[in-house]
Image 1 (tube, rainbow, N blue to C red):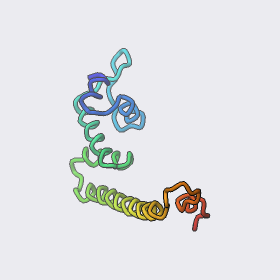
Image 2 (image 1 turned 180 degrees about the vertical axis):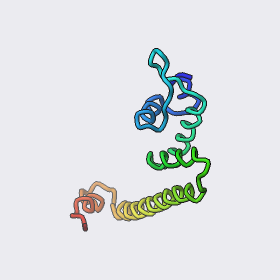
Image 3 (image 1 turned 90 degrees about the vertical axis):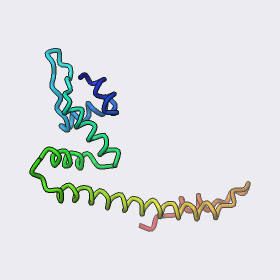
Image 4 (image 1 turned 180 degrees about the horizontal axis):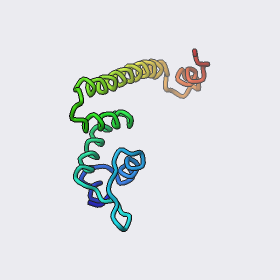
Length: 131
């Protein structure tokens, strides 16, 4: 398969596929003309990577998960640990987003939103940070 075929079948843009090759996640064969030739296993890896990235796994997590997938002697506990750590990062981000939402909702409700120039939103943004 050429890159266009594997892009269509995997749902990944050709640019992403080239990037995954550049960073060593996949290694397609090369024809005599230098063009990439993808095998079914390359397509399978790309679909795997696409699903993992859609779930928000980092490139390094994907590298680890691919290695675990290819290691038939792996312990499922190792896979679960990678997924658990990612889940913890998601929970942390959700907490941050909820805090941001609460702060912004408070500021929006405090703003009159009329023709007057005073605005609690701008005042808050201009205030020195409490770091």
